[in-house]
Image 1 (tube, rainbow, N blue to C red):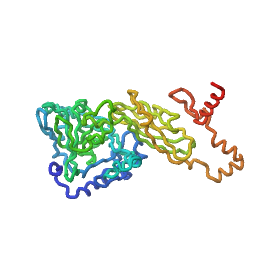
Image 2: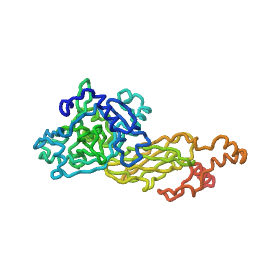
Image 3: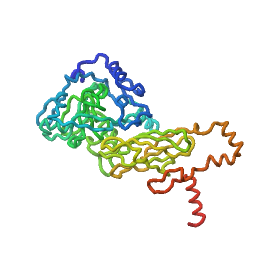
Image 4: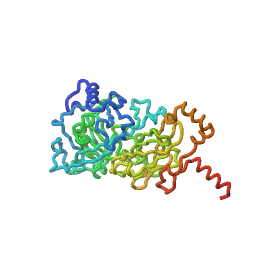
Length: 437
């Protein structure tokens, strides 16, 4: 087990792990599971910045937080490689051998928004000891390290039909009454594309212990389960590893089309481009909601356009380019929009996105965010009564229902036309039918 392999035994694993939470995580973190620790930032802070502060980055652990001495840590590379060997942290940080790699990467747990899944499909996952993730199991950080491809090259390259690389994480979890290390694999093709790195720095500082100190794996564009923390061994394999249930079809994030067959389970970790998260809240002025969120795209692409609707997809408002964060191949783009919204009560805000290859999700897969009641925007009851006494109840009601004029609405960037209230559109269509157009 990990405590026999590296770092020495921990006498009080849960207590030691919780101490790391107190030392390294933000006080506003939402603690979903105390042990193994799982935590996420509150919704208001998830996309507050394009780069997630380290103390607010979500944590998904399967066991205790290992206490590893970086000076004693070694990475063992074996299996079908030409020259198996071990590397220390100093070896990996030798820039004469390994060029530095710096990448902005969004890591997402495949269980994000599980609480909504449980609400819609009761009994599918909630019977297990799983963290009830909301929107916070996403985080974007700037990692510094080396490409795993370069490390394999120092071992002479792959040999003997090696097509996958299996990673051993030092955290311990339990499966079928047995204690074991965390084990997953990725295809060699992913590594060969320079899309897997060994990182020792996160957002300009050494990796915190809770995030994989001293060295972790970062698999860009894959579900977070593939970015193994506390990695201490890498083994080449001819076939993908099936050591954990995450590699089974039910755990895939990006499903193939029915006519494309079942993909190699080693390729099943790619994030679907429909990944989205966000929040919406009413501002002090009536008729608008301040919506904010983040979008990622699959296959190393980036979101090129984000649109938001407050009426079920009847009218779409494009997020201006100036309200989108910068483009990065494996990172989200955060966005913010003052969304026109004249409805009362609960409103379903729909978000859709195109990537830079003009791929988008079908309407049924557009993301839906709930907007809370907006009664606080209405004048106090005494003021409304006074207004009705002065204007008369009919005029007051007419003012409340009257849509804003065209000058108060931004032009539709997709069509170059002013936005219309759905009720006005229906009245125009009705008049055209009457006139026989």
